[in-house]
Length: 498
Image (cartoon, rainbow, N blue to C red):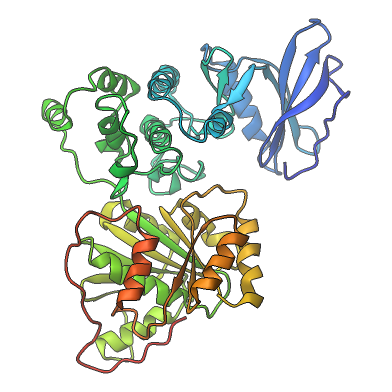
């Protein structure tokens, strides 16, 4: 917890609950196991939360929300202590014997049984159906492995209603954009109000996460090859529809999902024909490139990746994030042959380039407008662009191959250590293979790719194309879309990467 906890073993809360030990911890809260002195032998879980000034009502709202709910897969609230003068508040609730789904998955190294996946999905649909049928409907908004408890009888329980909310019919957009990266629906990042379909998206992300051994939680090109072959019949098709970018193209209720799972052997086209809903293409392959420091060639790498992907996909964009960035302006001026450019979008040989792009615009670009998008996040300075890096299917860290700068990469990796990203790739421009191997060992076996020298990122050599294939080996379609092309072949161009 970011704030110092006031509880510790032996402390008595409310003259009734004696704290025994800490059993969980999050960004703004801790959970303790406590003994009830009035009911000898009874154990409760106490959630201690610290609210910032002006947000005391949020914890009280969570308590009031839970008190109105009654379902065997939800914790029962038995006591509540309102925020004190420092903002500390306490919820006393059922102590669930067992472990989180996150810990369970880790114990099996992501390889849980297909039967377990199906049973878990049905159990979660039970409780989601109850929440969504509540008056007003309750949207959980943070369905993820660490917020699901498994009892000793392998029964699922939802925990941590910290960001749950009641759906408001008249509200067009969430006031606060919350949810866990990788499992939250696109509308939770802005542009719409989360509703029951947002929880269904998260369920699809969770099921895909389990079905790919913890590798993926978004439906992107090439995901099929990572889905285990022993999945229940039709399960992958159900997941695919749950993960539609637009809420109206998903299942509209938990009951619909349950029915689809029960009829899972029915082919997807037939089911769509029966419902009259057209199944649109889903998912954009998002690459986010983050440099450990300025001047390493981050933009150069982004253009190479965009050029490479353009040979595989129809619609590709390279997006420069940050209103003060200037690299794409220089490229646009050369491409269009004029010193003063106004439009932020320009096209070079079939690739759309977006310069000086705000986060709000990025969300729309990665929500189905393109087959593949490369985000140029620049160098890591603060956390303002970190969310896009964490959400990416292919998160790429660009570092220096020089031995004396290797610590820059290691330091950034430590800063990112609290965010699990199994698909992260480290790229070292102009580095020898030995430098890549040394960094790979220092990082404990992470994928490290060295990029050979190349003056024009729009014209890949055999060696650089091989490096690109190594980066994208898990995401490429089986056949390339078109042959390579040259950038501004008619006029000499001296490229200087950023």
